[in-house]
Image 1 (cartoon, rainbow, N blue to C red):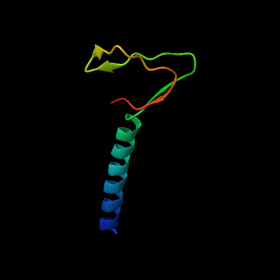
Image 2: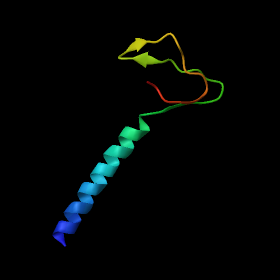
Image 3: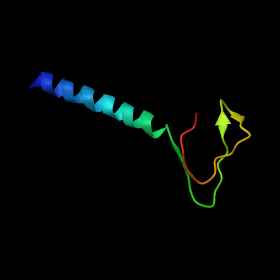
Amino acid sequence: MEKLRTILVIVAVIAGIFLWFASSLYQKVPAGYVAVATLFGEVQSDPYEEGLHIPV
């Protein structure tokens, strides 16, 4: 029983890390707004228009 609990805790932690990482892979810009794109703190010339973006 203790081994099963340990496995469940490990799976939950891995799933939490995966969800946290996956949520940072996209950026949503609300209608009527423009987001400033940065790369390592440097402002990029192309802004993000409204919609869903996957920064690369």
